Amino acid sequence: MSVKTRLLETLGRKESLIEQHAREHKLVIYGGRAVQAQGGFLARQTSDYDLSTAHPKREAGHLTSIFNRESAGRFFYQTPSKKHKGTEKVRFVGFDFKRGTKDDFTIADVSKTRPLKTVNIQGIRYARLSETAKDKAESLKDENFEFRHGKDREDLQRINAIQKVERLF
Image 1 (cartoon, rainbow, N blue to C red):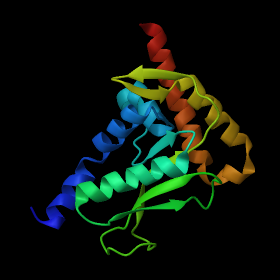
Image 2 (cartoon, rainbow, N blue to C red):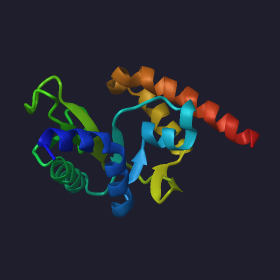
Image 3 (tube, one colour):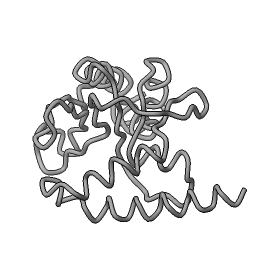
Image 4 (cartoon, rainbow, N blue to C red):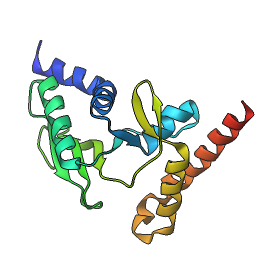
């Protein structure tokens, strides 16, 4: 199998690789992916994962190793977040295959968060919708997160809609 084929297959399996790692290492998935897991089609689409752990640097390193091993190359790297102290990013080098260029994209943000109440779905721990709503509301109060206020407002509206549907059943 060619390296190109392995890389494309690895990118195609991104979700299953991250979820398997989260399951095995008891990480908590929070943010948009947690809303998706609990709200299905009512949730906003998101491309990356937010993972909570006591050891962000170590877990980001594990994920980077997994992706590089699966792709048979060094197409993924770990870097500290510029906006969130203590957060590590797992990134893909993009199709120019150069690290640190505009086409690189993040596949996972790994952080140490406050303790989160979780729900277990297929062996994976996800932050409860109420926890995500708290975080979004806090973010909307903080001027430093103004760059994401639009997404957070939309997520809060969607969480409220999901919770209304849940109350019907």
